[in-house]
Image (cartoon, rainbow, N blue to C red):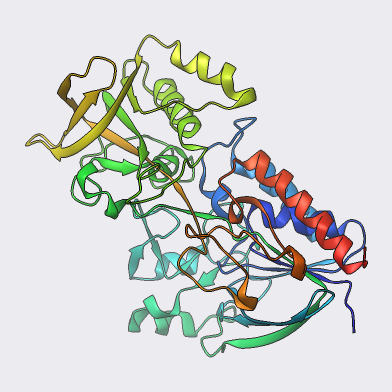
Length: 412
């Protein structure tokens, strides 16, 4: 029996876009998101291209569209475990982990503050902590707390047990969805910086990743938007960006991640706007500023306190003062030098979130984890599940995937 419903795996910007495109022409759409909230990687950014607006700007509009469209149903803390059938008639098993918090329980901040135990926040990428009862951002969707049951102390459990909003006995459940086509919009994850031992990742405290910089600069981040050194909370006066940190490297990511150069230029602007006297150096192999971003790049690089150096960073070490010493070979002069900075940002690449995992229905992926097939099965990849893209191109990719999914369920 054929189905006109469409499954979207992933509730980030691409997944939401694909779901709304299909729903708004009349199709029932199911979004399955593994995290407690929709929004994906964009929700972690301070600003995103092309308008350089905060993530709430675009995401809150999308969330409102979801709330107003009865064709869209979404499941958070959910994971597709099995896909059987064929194009037009798929049966999908979805495992949903317990949230332990009932619907309509938006304001639990007072209860959360009463809890004792704190753990590192995954959303803050190790730059901040959270309680076991939490939301990610002020604009989190669904607007509903989640309880990390495994990280509750005995005292915390006793405090939570008295709340009508909390169900400590909630169990995992499995549901079955019948759909005609599937869109995989599983997004990306930052490459694991701890693999970059020569660049100080994991061993040099004032050496952070580009996504950690986004959280530092975000008004709802761990420092309320103040860009400071992790070790002492001091204002950085001399910042370096190291491009292609793990990208275009056969030992790590054997491709260009497309967005890293623009991300560093954007973050250089964060720093220069906040600290007019701070100097910024960008060490790069090639600066890639595609198409419409050329003017933005030129404006940033015209800043007299920003310097670009074409050269490869070979090594990063902590100095006794807590600064970072970079060993750099200038590709133009051929001179190797040691340059000291008080904060270093590694422009780590985009890795597909599904890298290293086996997908249901034997959906083909390449050696890097990007989806490279499945269209003959009525399964379509969108956004960074397919290849490295910025937010705008991810949305375009999602629209294209939604159109193909619609054509599949309509038998065209």
